[in-house]
Length: 229
Image (cartoon, rainbow, N blue to C red):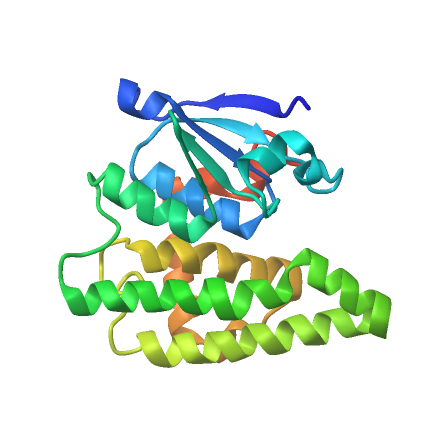
C-alpha cells in the first residue's frame, strides 16, 4: 500500500530530526498530540497520511508498523514506536532539548496524571469506532449525550486537579506534556461535541493560551496535508 507522503519542515533541519516519519490522520486527537509535541521540540518530520475513513490502517503494510492498527506511529531510523503516550515519552528521552516534562517530581507526576486521565479515561470512550457502535446499537441520537457525559466527567476531574497549579498553561507558565494532551482534547470537545466550557473556567482560560501558540496552530487538523475542507 502507498501511504500519502508529505515532508513538513520546521526551523530545525538537523540530521537527527530529518529522519523522523509520522504516520498520522488529520482528525486523530492522538496524532494531534504528537504533532504538537514535535512542533514544540522544533523537530522536522515527514508526514505520512493514513486515511482511517478508507480503512488504510487495516492494510498489511500498516499492520507491520503497528499490529494494533491505530495511528499515530513514529519511525525514527530503525526504531518504530506506536501509541501516542509511548511516542511522547520516547521523544522526551531521545530529544531532551525543549523538555516537556519538568525536573520537579511533583510537577512531572501531575503532567503524567493529566496525560493518563485524557488518554485512558476520556479519549478511548469517545473514539470514532465506539461512537459508531453506539449509533448502531442504540441510535444516532445517543452519540452526543454519551460523548458529552464522558467529556464532562473527565473535564471535571481535570478542572479540580489543575485549578491550584495552573498559570498561563496547565501547570504554570511553561508549556509541558500536560498541555500537549489537553489542547487537542479541549478543541475536539468544543468543535465536535459542543461542550460547554463555561463549566470549566480553568480549562477554558488555558485553552485561550493554547490557541495563540504557533506550534499548536501548525499541528491543528485543518492545517494537515490530508485535511478535507
